[in-house]
Amino acid sequence: MSDLRDLLAYATTRAADYRQRMAEAPVFPADADLDAIRKALGPLPDEPAPAAEVIRQLADIVEPALVASTGPRYFGFVIGGALDAATAADVLTTGWDQNAFNVVSSPGAALVEDVAGGWLKDLLGLPGGASFGFVTGGQAANTVGLAAARQHVLAAAGWDVERRGLHGAPAVQVVASAERHVTIDCAVRFLGLGTDTIRPVAAGAQGAIDVADLARVLADGPAGPTIVCLQAGNVNSGACDDLLAAAAVAHEHAAWVHVDGAFGLWAAASPATRHLVQGIESADSWAADGHKWLNVPYDSGYAFCAHPRAHQAAMSFTAAYLTGQGAGGPRAPGDYVLESSRRARGFATWAALRELGRTGVAGLVDRCCALARRFAEQLGAADGVTVVNDVVLNQVLVSFGSDQETNRVVDAVQRSGECWMGATSWHGQRLMRISVSSWRTTEADVDRSVAAILAARSGSAAR
Ligand SMILES: Cc1ncc(COP(=O)(O)O)c(C=O)c1O
Image (cartoon, rainbow, N blue to C red; front, side):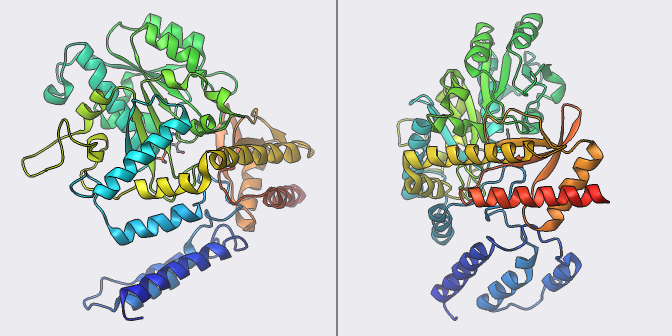
């Protein structure tokens, strides 16, 4: 194993073997001895080591502490698996080690992002003229979208925030659902607006924004620069805001509309769920993840903007030595993201979309939704078990009677190794939170997981 060819073959074989094993291995490494693993990782060595030995050591030491989120029975957070083509494309991306800054740093990376970005807009029903950036994930996508929003609403008020900053600027109000994702608050913090600028809007029974309350909050608020944050896919229930109605109300107040659709935006990719995000095209910016429901490996997210100039003004920069930037040239990927030098994320997304095709993406969305309904039907039929949300997408929220019992069942399921789902608190209740987001999950995996959940429940009830 002396050359790079052998080393990469070894690494990819280890990764492939690992992924294959994950269909049957305990989903969470509950028995991993983290102290022993830390010790095995060792202190900083003084002497170099052969690459082959390093890679074998790394895999041997760390694999026992990995989580089988690429396997078929991982239902925690919203973590997709990783499609085969996208995984292999990511291996190539690492091998090619391109800097996806612009066409001079990598013509291939820039071109692939250009093509894949167009495909994404097409699939998600976004305006053809929207700009896009390939970012690390939903947090970055929300930050980029809100940076473009901040630029635009302040420019409309006669203030160049990129040059003058926020000192002395007209106050910007951010209006967002009480059930927004916490990364909206983070983005507002990063952008110097401060979370106190967020004016919360009530959410309805399923967690979608109350459009009447949105109208009230906007009517009661100051008339200055305003950003409204909507959501496709409530992180707990999966509910989508009524984007058509909410965006119309927001635009009546000349507000910028940003949609956080980290996973829910993918509803647009299937004819069966597209109605959930009707009006999606009327927003001004959108955030979506590749590494969740599209099943691209980490890290992969997308920031889209209906106002390319605001997007560019917020993100781009140039310097005398940076050839390939500037007006009139080919699209420069670096003009739309937070980073300067960065990984060529477009390759994995292109591969995922090429592997699935339009019908395959719709099929993935439909299958996950159908499997979520299967969870809901089977669990909801059991005594003392209640599914508390309308399962419109891939999220299922389950109560086992009391908060204490729910915590106990979740804990027992997690320790069982059969499957893994997290817990959440929503509308005053402790709940098991199931997210079906992996291309590998089958009906048999759901049935097996339901059996594990019900066994955990009887076990804890018997105590
Ligand atoms: C609705 C929503 N927005 C944003 C995020 C943040 O995405 P990421 O973890 O990719 O940064 C998530 C993650 O779960 C999410 O569900």
